Length: 300
Image (cartoon, rainbow, N blue to C red):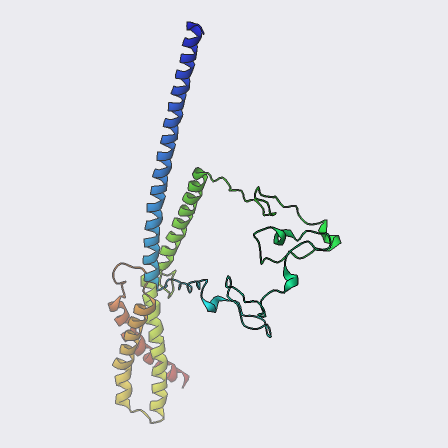
């Protein structure tokens, strides 16, 4: 080999070494980026899990109960029950005494039958394995071919599917974005009360106090009728109309707003507009009684 050939070979080796170093640096940078993306997704999913736990506790949703642990293989309760009249059950893997009902007879030994192979039961080392069920002649031609592994025995060979970490991380990121979107929607729904969720707090309070005042007005009409037949005297009727029924309507509206007008997730106590409710309840019932008197006199 001449000096020029040796120098060209050295240059070629140096180029190959530099290319290998560049490829190694690119691969190392790619791995660092993948690890950083995986750590970021892990932190993000952990924060999402904590936030969903808080949302579930705030809305009163308990975690789903975990199922019972699987029974161990040696547990007799996990063994399948034998059919009726077949005798006592036999544990899997336990030796079977000769002459017992579960022991195979002399004709149960695997081997060739009618000039055909016994399948997997005929392989050495597979004692105790029954032969495969025979297919009819019309279905034998429709059977799918099986890929034979190097070990033999007709067992299909499994192939591991290649997984691209970049694709998997991208799918995980999209699922995390979707989980964030659904979590924001759940938080918006949790910030709405169960009673009139689309109304403003002021309109909701006015509607609740007015409904409670209307219910007190119905009770007021019942008391007026009872006073007309002599069951209730005039002093009791006036006390209920001026103080009793308005107070009941006010406290009823207060309790309804506190029970069904409070969002599941809210910072602090929502406003209940106590002065407005007091004014509505203590004016609505007496005004209803005055309107009843005017209507009664107008009809007479």
